[in-house]
Image (cartoon, rainbow, N blue to C red; front, top):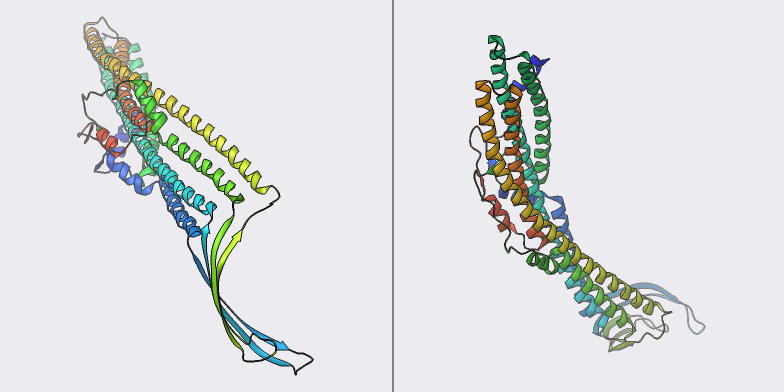
Length: 443
């Protein structure tokens, strides 16, 4: 069983290497690919295009309307004073209607313009969310690759330790227990490698779904970089910015303004309306007593309409609009609180992540020293094989956790800016500048 696992493990690196594309992709390129492929963003853009057409529709309610009408009828006339007759009757007309005083139409036009601004805010938020989703998926792939690399490093170190334990057992300086412990660790690392490789492929597939392209080899974080704390450094600045400027709050503000205007629009239904109307018409055989009569009529005037009683429908619609305005106000306050809480959590998450990075950097140095000491102790006989194996695992795991903590800090920093409504492609480019083309042999 052990030999079978070793053969499979030896074949895995070659198989994965053959499956990887030759060129590398950075974070910015992944985002640009996702811009053209993401269905959620494209859906919002389609909604924006549709909403812009509503402005034209609402504006038409304040512009004149012209229509043409015509009819052709076969008429039969039979009277007691003349013989019955049959003839064709024709009529044509052009009609004009121009709204002079319709406050409801003006309010509807203003609401339509606000609706466009609302969908534009939704589009900006969708693009911002896409930045976060791409960044998260990108660094998830890097973390999965780091996990595979960690397990393979452990496996190589265990292989060397296993060979050393076998040699020492053969010459009588170690017991069979050292060899068995190393063998058990090796077999476990092979099983872990299968799991890690599967997880890496899942993460790569998630990124490919966003970008719409096969995921090439990704650029990785530069070695030895120093991550910066959020600027401005005060939590209150971020929470205040989130309450005022986050896209969720902006949308809630616009919804509240539209709801307030809806109250006026419904109240204007009590107001009179005044339209300028006109028509010009021509008819043939219009008379019933003679054939061949032609007539042309031109009419122009004012049409006044005043609703006196509508069964309470207008008042009910006003009360409905008042209740919806109150709902929009509560939704706005809820959006502000959620934005403030989200910004606070993200700010604390970034600072906590930076502290974790600092601690893990110190732990990496300590783990390296502990491994060196255990290797020296094993050589002189004061340490046993399991001590070396544990020290190796601790070092490799610490390095993996340190890389993951750095990824989390970068993503949390982007999320913090997003909650404050300040996240853009420039911020993504700043993170992208921290990446470099992977060096040969690092995977």
